[in-house]
Image (cartoon, rainbow, N blue to C red):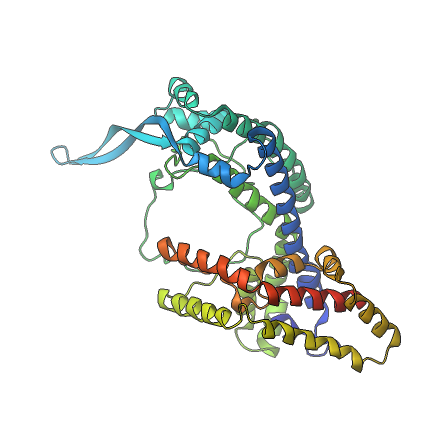
Length: 419
């Protein structure tokens, strides 16, 4: 909407900024991200089938990681305590035993193969003897999978991401032997607090991600309690695929948002404050910022979406109404277009063409919303039991929305292919 508002003198009502940053920018990046995730998911699932057998996929492996198999780790931590008699702080070493599940044990096994990971584990009092004991409790199939991810797949993905990194920065990504993402325990890092620093000043989106920032060797503790090897592996790939897709667009948007001439122009000719709002809209568009409302607002929004979906699900007449858009071809004077449209309408497989060729159309189909984000429950930020309930309702309503989504797919496929 804002990009269109900048193009008041453009004949098509959209303008060059719209075409560059939306049509050929954000939309292309989103499709690239989805394609990348599809490729990585297939590669991971194929490897899981090879190791664990037919019928297994990433969810089964994650469930296996949630099981406890008798593994535990003894962690040493240093805490500062004030000595009243001496009137000064003293560093006291404490030792505690943590029972860990398969996912946590597998994470320790993975990062121990990196020199940086081993340094951090040693600083926590976890040495090779403990690591060997933890490894003995693991299923050999889990070890085989994580070895493949470190020795073969992550290095393979690095080559892909490295090409983007060279294009953006002219330098190579760090190449770390046996690389695996490190989850640092931020609570263990000394940090001075300034109560006047509100921390809510929103800046520009960044082309950097935690996975590509140059690693600085230190002895900060690992967050073992909140580190599952499979979950960390998947999250790393998702963040890197997003970075690989969006970083070039973000770089160009940052250049645009940093241009004082551009900012002054839109503040003057659109409305005062448009530059700051446009910057925020850019951050939302590339997924680096999600506006947060109050809990009450989120609850009302979720309830409204559920009500709207409930009025649509399983109502065939609502789905059939969508076919009325097909009569629009009658108003077309182009006989060739009408002939193509009728041919595509008669061909039920036109939807396959739409899924294969229309940007983001597969995502539209899978969301079951017909492109209306107001019906989507995907971004709802409920937590705990409420989130589980919303997930169950979402799955059920997706089945109910199937007739509407199928007609939407059919109509859009037939008409888009004709065009």
